[in-house]
Length: 286
Image (cartoon, rainbow, N blue to C red; front, top):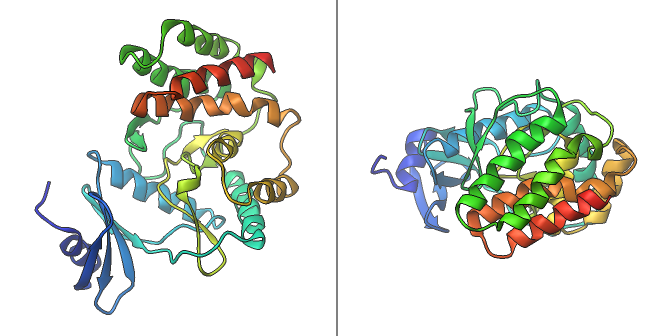
């Protein structure tokens, strides 16, 4: 990696001199550019992670639906985006977000697992590797490329007991009968938890830190419900009005939550394994 700091990286990638910087974490800083906007400068957690993030942000923006911070520059180590001035989560913004999310999903993807144009096959969700292998049959693809890889890693790390793994594996075997009606690949944010939903001071939501790929639209919505979100009922009602979900969506939420719960099991261990097993049991009982 280079010896750049956030200010130097921002100047190099945007062409504007850095007038000041404020470190927010080990990998994130806010930089004031001379004659330019205030930007967020992020250093890669893993090789290639910010390049995948930049490709995802551009793909989401290209749909003309949800708002994302503009990408000002990037390379293999650094990503520079506009800063989002924080606001309060209001009902109007939530309803707009629900409708915009429906439009994003409707923009589609070439296949399940398709990466953003210019994005790598080997991408990330948070700090966990996420391989964008494509498929045409959602139940099979979801089991093989979004559930079982993380289940194996959790078992190998000792985070998931064999009894729990058997329950998750059974849910994967029964996925074709649990998945509901077939749907075309949607354009997903891919890591749509509350921390990646920013309520802007201008009254609009912006999404950050995508793990963008082609997938089932119910996965984004289930992840949004997993850790809670302000004005969630307003968001979901507006989404449902704009693009009604297939009957039985509520019963499929645990099935779609298996993916993020197993990612969290791999990254953090602890009680996430129990939550993943509980989700698998709920999916099987639906």
